[in-house]
Figure 1 (cartoon, rainbow, N blue to C red):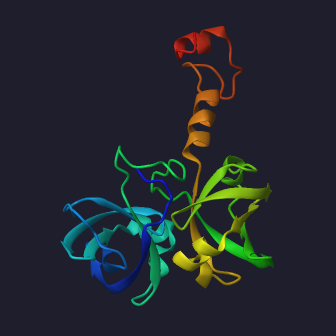
Figure 2: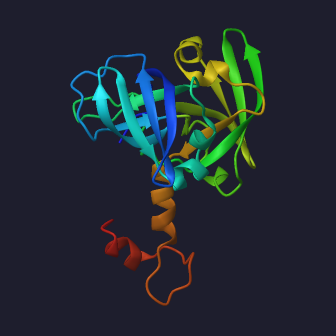
Length: 217
């Protein structure tokens, strides 16, 4: 589990075929204090398992599924990525609850300046846009952001100068692709609201029996 608060950037040192997927050797710009073999590290928002950790270098295996469903299949040695180590129970939850399971790939539609702020507008698949709401949370390449506005198949976010400097968002150009994770709470709420008993049609209305069964009273 993560928060979407990026600890720092890293660089892809090497990429090689491995078991049908790829093995990435990465180097973080920050110290990996108290490293644990097998710990989870989010790389551009995708939760990966780190091993062979030596100082600030580590290796991860990227499955064929992750390569096809995220932007990790398109990064090359020398490319910068955002990194976040897994949340500890004692940590501050400064962003929002992020699973590290990428829902879709988005594309940067436009980039505009408003004073010292940068407005980024992204296109996303329409089957995902129902989970993105105005003033809600969304994760872009692992970064927890607040949605400025949203419409069918699109949303925009406002980026402060600090985030632009310390993440890969400052390198994006129109047409760039990014990993998107929608708010996991929205998906759970939808699941509850559309849950049905055996034989009932999907989308049945909520009634007293449903509320009692699910512990609401």
